[in-house]
Amino acid sequence: MKELKTKLLKQRLYSLHSSLGVFISLFMYISLFFGIFTIFKPFITVWEKPSRHFERIDSTVTDYEKILKAIISNPNYPKNNIYIELPGYFDDPAIKITHRFMPANYFNPYTNQKIEAKNELSYLGGFLNHLHYGRPFMIIGKIIFGLIAIGTMVLILGGLMLIIKMKFNNKGRNGQANFSKWHRKIFLYTSPIFLIIVLTGALMNIGYITAKPLTSIVTKGESNDIISFTSSVLKPAQVPIKSLEEEVKMLSISKLIQKAKNINTSVNYQKIKLINWNDKTARVQFIGYNPYKPFLNGVYNKEKVLLSAVDGRLIKDIRAEDSAWVILFADAFYFIHLLYDVDIFTRIFVALLMGLSTFAIGFGMLLWLERKAKIFDGKVVFYHWLGRFSLAIMLGVIPSTAILFITQWLLPFDLANKITIQQIIFYNSWLGTLVWSLYRLNSYKAAKEFLFSGGILFILASIIHQIVSGFSLFSLYESKMFDILSVDLSLIILGSILIIISIKLPKNRESAKFFWNKKYTRST
Amino acid sequence: MTLNNIIKNLTTPESNGRKIGAFRIVFGLFGGLIVSYLTVTLFAILAPTSKPQSLVVSLYLYTFVWACCFLWISLSISKIIVILRVFIPSLIFSTLILILK
Image 1 (cartoon, rainbow over the protein chains, first blue to last red):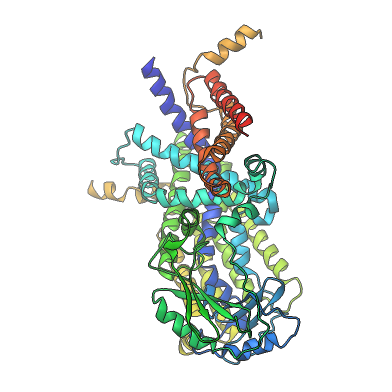
Image 2: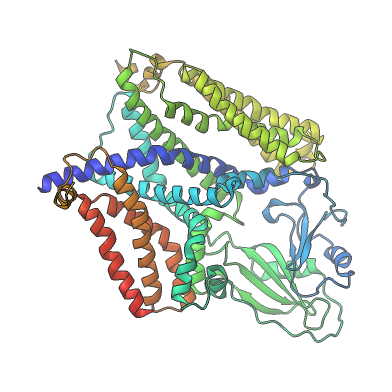
């Protein structure tokens, strides 16, 4: 009986993993693919806008007073709780001034002029982010992607159980065994971080939507909005300071930034909050991210320095570890997924891990298809609808995303409905790749074509950006626009890698057998 | 099909597990949702911390508990165990929530 039990458990675990995995991997791949672009969203949002093509300036040399004067001279603009986002926050070289009840204003820190970008229609980075979590289908898409995230957690836990319970050997000598080996090996190492990312993804897509009964029961009907109810602990409100209505001259903000930098040396300051500005009780709060304390700050938790704006004395120096345990708990979860303020190295690290995971998903899919294909080996051409569909989803998405980047600079920025046209072209070209993968009998050839065209189109996107914007790679380097230069360069590098992969990949099933077993075939 | 047959069908384990079947997936998904939801609700009520704090913890862990319950329910040996693994915890947790609320 016990033997039967363990046999059944193993069989069920395996069939649950493969049947659920084949269905979920297609959606998860989309989420991961666009997620990698979303990691670099700050850079893409700067690259996509002509109004942001200027050098990023050091935050201490800007003349904030001039900019503030232009804003505050409006008598209706509130003088309390004004936020200034410093140049370089989210890699945006512009200065952004916001208030809860006022529209945001953007300024060029060189000319101190307001950036009027009313007819600059551009929504590339945001759209890539929306595709990452199913937002184009509104609430339904969000719920579907949330369920996919929960399914992925089932797959991760089930996969780890499979590795423990079953004896896999890594000495297989055919494609199937190699796919299985790589699928297991990659996911075994990426799973800890992948699990946290998927967990927070499920939380953001499904957790908050379904939390109403939970909140209502726990609070005994007091509230059913979990966000506002928990914000009392996650974002504790500051005690408002009463204004004395006495106008005093303020110290220069750039000098105050320098002072704050001397107080807390390891923080990258990103935002400034002005409290009771131009009053005797005026204070400035500097808010930033400490890169030496990952997982402890960056989302809800921020390091802050509070200075008096009248004489510049230190009022409060808040460090990351001073916060309540709940805030640290929340940040530990969200940090690796949201990557709000982090430096480029963390971004590249997470992007590499997730890129590896997309490969692992691809190997899992190949493993499943290879098992199906083996039955027909040598008799007929293997033609499975799921194979064609996953070919279009996994590789067809590459040229269509490249087209998204091309249309961003090819279509004029004042074209009415530009964003809609751009998205329609993207969706249709993605659908076109499905037609193409259904049409081509030899799917190896179709895969090569998708990768090759994707590579060419990505390189073309960079070239078109250089021509239309008027900044070549060299002039971008000369005028120190490194954020934009890095996007252009990475598009070219990505395109070249795709072209190389497309040339290296096998042409047909016969050469594929050799390709996935090079080690074995060479030694004999 | 008589009631006896249904019970017999539910209690005998299937001879092989190569097909997982819609029964286990549906019970795993929705049963897992109910069990995990009640678990985190009970946790939030019982936790010694303040209400917003315990809500944060239970909300953050709830999708993970859901995935664990899905796995636990769908891998049962026979179909009757699948049903019991959904209903027994749900009944216990919901009565406890009703009492403690």
